[in-house]
Image (cartoon, rainbow, N blue to C red; front, side, top):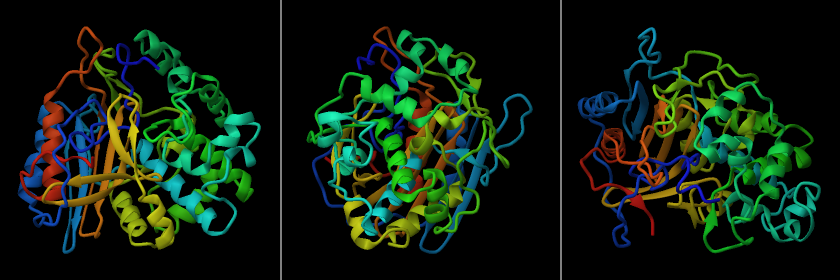
Length: 412
């Protein structure tokens, strides 16, 4: 897909200045081994960094940071630009591709039970969705780590994006997509690569296929299986798949700018999430996300051997052309002098969320904003730097490291 001169979707989504996925490119240092730990939580500095994101232009930002001894929650700005309703730290958020970690954990549970083999061809299970030679070459593992070569379906489900128009966003607000319909768009599109390529290509098509695989082997819907065996196992009280276009419980409005094409940004908090399904449809809170990743990395959602598989990484090219370090539903982020973090990030229309947990469980951060794709584009279609980028970088560094540490960058 030649999107560089069109809309750079970045629906992976990208940890601003942590991974280079959301149009933010940071120079990578030489490989290193991080041994120092983060400083203790400083509420005053976190509050200042949070307010900085709001002042930079985000209507509302909220998050939770944990270390070994305490938990901090905070919010800054408004949940609704029209009414001025303040944003709250306990609000629910559409968390986008963070959903992929939940789906990957569910798949690994089925691997543990012998119902799925990581290196089995997807065509053994879903020949009608990935037929022929392709289905025989693409394995379950390749779907999980985005090395299948299957392209993303999003520009085909939202065709106006290829003409630099937001029309499709409004046209599809209440449309109910079927997973097989979206998968067919991805399978029919020109390949993004060959199955098993050493550098993967991020694709939501992969995770819709994994949802269909879960349904095939469990006899229930993927959403129901994930709810019972991942969400409930983790003890999450405010996380779930939406059953309609509205979010239950307190939540912010979610404003999409689409790189300057929607001005002023438009609220897409009411939206049918069937276009993302098991790839990016979950709604959650920052408290729940920290609880989930803490338990996952502690071996309480999948076995230690499954977690080891999930942490085997490959380089993956994101939807905006940058490179991230990706395992099976997990990002890896090394921060010099601070540690190795695991987690995921995600966007949907109008919302961005990132959740990262240090490998030893001693530090966690989950942060959400209710504005997305704020960077305006130049004449070549490339999103340009914005003060929000630096403000988020400052917040993330303060939350993860407790210091003005060097800008985190992907593991080489």
